[in-house]
Length: 457
Ligand SMILES: Cc1cc2nc3c(=O)[nH]c(=O)nc-3n(C[C@H](O)[C@H](O)[C@H](O)COP(=O)(O)OP(=O)(O)OC[C@H]3O[C@@H](n4cnc5c(N)ncnc54)[C@H](O)[C@@H]3O)c2cc1C
Image (cartoon, rainbow, N blue to C red; front, side, top):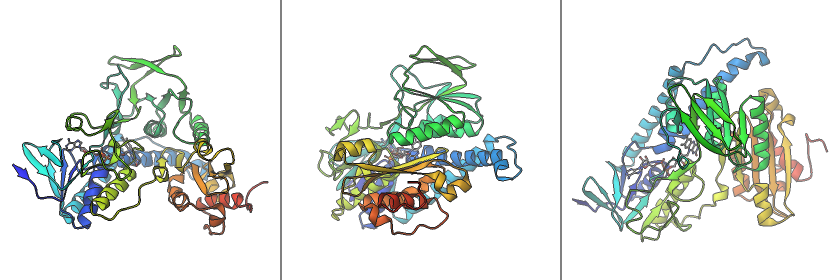
């Protein structure tokens, strides 16, 4: 059977796929969305939302443990993991219901089942062919592992880590990127003895070196052990523990090892390669209009090389829908996509690192770092950290990097500054409410504009 009705067929109902579906429907296109599991994909069911719920529960645990610091008598009696999971699952299911409602309201034709790309703009599901005037591929990503390292038993990926029904005593986290650092932070707050192993020389290695240093200092204070610049060589498990070996000769015994070494594109076995879609290392290649090499076939989200973030998926989905509808949207600047690691403390950034800016603009790049020690609200919260600005020579602010509790929320302003190509002089006269953490951004721009306020010269 062939369904040849839709203006747009989308394969995969995660952040990228459903954003494209909703925007296309708003623009009057008829949409068929094919999803084999649950609408919402990784972010809603196995990623952003459940991890952030765990991180919030972790923050509550820290507050209970540290009440004394604020003159409030609290003690942490313990973590009821069943209760934590219930809270997390309720949020996911509420949002899932909302999303299903939105799909209905947009009159998206949801097709349940596993789709296989059949060439042209056709996807086959259970013997039925769905052909659109256009097709968007949005099949997302999966948790990678290392060659020879099999997931299973005590060696788990983020999916299993999210649904543990007990709190381990000791965990090794393999990988000091965003996902590894977030789980390490949750577990440390829950009283787990955590060791992070990272082959690169620093935690959150994709961030500005300043951010890594700040995070490492905070993690040291939190007694989270991390071993950077050291390779993992193997892991053995039995019914009692997992023993992790490092190239330094050291071994670490733990209850669990979380493998958080990145996510690979979910593109194998869906017919892409067979149908001649241009790919590299498993990723689908597109131009800056998100077009693949096949006419009228687009790709969005984690299968496209670049930042694997839900809001990038949303933006690309919207972009592809608007491009298909003929609105000629402005191409997405990958550097303008905000990045947040929601650990305690948080790490947030947008634009270029100092190193990348120097590569692009040369030695005339200037930076200014404002310590949260001078920020009243941060002191009230008892968080340390800093804001670092990177400025192009005689040009705008091209990088903003923040570390500290709750600074993820400041990335909203930071991304406007970057994406509107603001000069320090543009931001300096804008008034930030006192006392807020946003003042740290204000102060940093005042200083870069040559009129520092709460700054020692
Ligand atoms: C632990 C964790 C935490 C994260 N936290 C954050 C965060 O805080 N913020 C953030 O921005 N990002 C976060 N991410 C990343 C974010 O989840 C992804 O970037 C985002 O989900 C990518 O969206 P996508 O649409 O490309 O793919 P996905 O969300 O993976 O969706 C792909 C969908 O396609 C479906 N599918 C695949 N193949 C087929 C097929 N053949 N037929 C039918 N359906 C198919 C899948 O079932 C899935 O629903 C996190 C990820 C993880 C794993």
